[in-house]
Image (tube, rainbow, N blue to C red):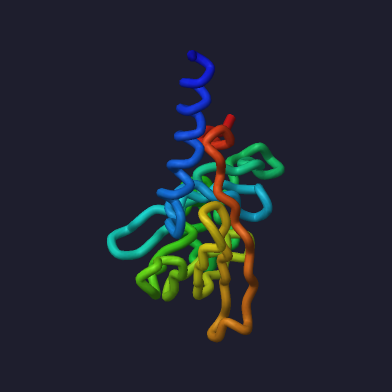
Length: 155
């Protein structure tokens, strides 16, 4: 009996979040092939995203990774960890599977691009950053971070 209860409880935990998350881009996502975790959250009517974990949070000198390529010299000293990369993404339809009108900042290049986000299922999204028209850009796949893989602290 005890084993059955645990099996049912585990099944409930695994199934409930997937159905609740379908089409919902909020939560933790692996970005840049696993180099970072970005937390996407609601910011009013729009979505925003912040770097909450980095695989390599330090530069070659052992100092925290900074936004060194930012075109604004006053912002070059801010940490990449905690940096808001996404902002202004708004749902483009009632299904909330596609979000448009936002911006994404790339600290590696120091550039800000227009952005769109499309849900490809409960645990996968496609994020496109582009200049001017969508044809001139790049699409990256982000995968939702499973609970056991959530990393909120660095050394």
